Amino acid sequence: MEQLEKKQQGADLLTEFLDKYGNDVTKSAQEGKLDPVTGRKQEIERVTQILCKRKKCNPCLVGDPGVGKTVIIEGLAAKIVALDVPPKLLGKKIYSLDMGRLIAGAAHRGEFEERLIKVIDEVKSSQGAIILFIDELHTLVGAGGSGPLDAANILKPALARGEIKCIGATTVDEYRNYIEKDGALKRRFQSVDVAEPPVAEATEILQGLRSKYETFHGVRYEDKALVAAVMLSNQFIRERFLPDKAIDLIDEAGARSHLNGSDVVTVADICRVISMVTKIPLESVTADESLRLLNMEEKLRRHIIGQEEAVKAVSKAVRRARSGVRDPTRPVASFLFTGPTGVGKTELANALAVEFYGSKESVIRIDMSEYMEKHNVSRLFGAPPGYIGHETCGQLTESIRRKPSSVVLFDEIEKAHPSVFNALLQILDYGSLTEGTGRKADFRNAIIIMTSNIGQGIVISKQGVEDDEANLKVAEELKARFRPEFLNRIDEIVVFRALKGEEVKAVVEIMIREVTERIRVSKGIEYDVENGLKSKVIKEGYSVSYGARPLKRAIVRLVEDPLADALLGGIVGEGDSITLFADGHVSQK
Image 1 (cartoon, helix red, strand yellow):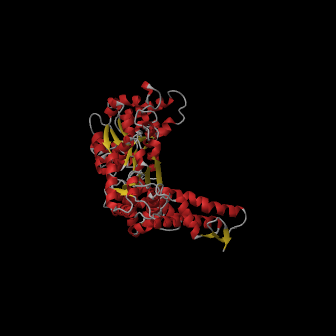
Image 2 (spheres, rainbow, N blue to C red):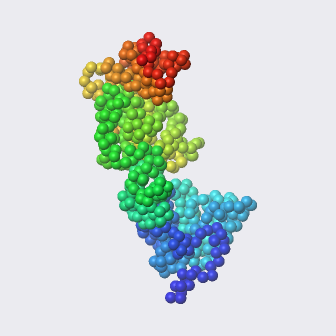
Image 3 (cartoon, rainbow, N blue to C red):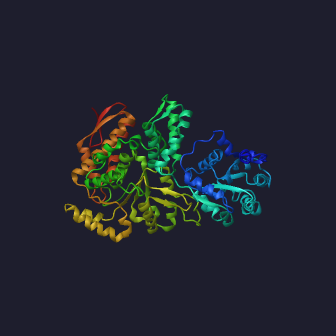
């Protein structure tokens, strides 16, 4: 019993430099300063097992940021304090080395290395009573001087001789880039993989932390709010990991509720925080979107005229995605829009961004004519490892990290260099892409749309013929241009048809309505456009070859220019109601 008490006290340990450059984790556990640890039993048991080995008794926790590597050490410290460890670990102290404090103020050559040596000497002199924990273990590699003065090289001899026990922690990428490349350092550590916890375990972790956050914020968390924090963060915050992202959510929701004078955190509060963090509209986050999805066709028809098959195909695909029927490892949906120019392919992508993600800003447009040459492709996805610029993020991968919930529009995909399609296969199949830096870009919350003018001649020449016949001929042309493995990975290939006369009139109505609304909001002017002017816009702005795209230029020339002249000439003022005629003159109502 006396021996046990002596082990518990860790009597007469010299810890001057450990106290100066580190933190006693076991002491913090004893004083109740650490958050309760829920789960991670297997990982704690594995670390305990490695620490009890005769040789190579140095575990290294390897996992993505935020999965809870440091919490495992806190859990081990709590078990040591509670005497819930094997006899070999009773009375041990875990000191966490603070690299920031160790480096701070070390201005002279050799000063940092001298501090590290003194820390290691104190761990040695404890004769196994102290276990050193180094978070971000990879920062030791290259720290300090070069060669023998490298911090990692200072640590290696003590590890090799078994004079100290050390626990490391690092991310998967940093372990691969630094630890694995240093064979001697890798050999001295036993890696322990720390995976992201499943949703059920992450919810248990939040339940365990609940009382701490309730006391801190002076609020009460509903059970459903904790579940929502895990589920919604897992769905909408793809670039981070559980449980960290869910913990941040309940923390911010608690702070928000406290500031607003509310003493209960509800599911609605979690949804609002998700919306603020991700920039996704609130209605897209809440469960109320089911009605909106059922009416998706009606909403898209407000923007798109004459492409009924395209609207139906897109609407069905997004409903599959949100109902949970689709494969969750792939993007929300993927489409290839093909057909004549100016018939609504790009406009449907924009409309989908507005109706599905809530904003036209949720479109990441990539003009594939910029990536016709092989040397330009690296700008899109990042250069491969070893090539110049491989440490720089690609245009697409960086954009999707900033806006993970987006419509990714590859415009004129047929112009892209063949190497682009290899990367697209990975995106379409696995919903992710690894760039040269080793970082993954997540496309699982994105809709992928590729547009092409392939088959435009067929569609125009087959006007008035059954759509199925034209579609078959377009499909044959697509097979001749694209590899089968690429086409097979696309959810829907949608053939857009040429617009008919009445449909062109409807498109003009929409375009003029947009201009009217813009002028009404900015200038307070209400105005109508005479039918004769609308006919003139169609006559001068529409052609079968170029579709509806030239209509915008015609509206600028025939509608916006006369209105601008009238405003600058003082004929029209703010608050007026006017009519615009085909000959360009403006009259007050």
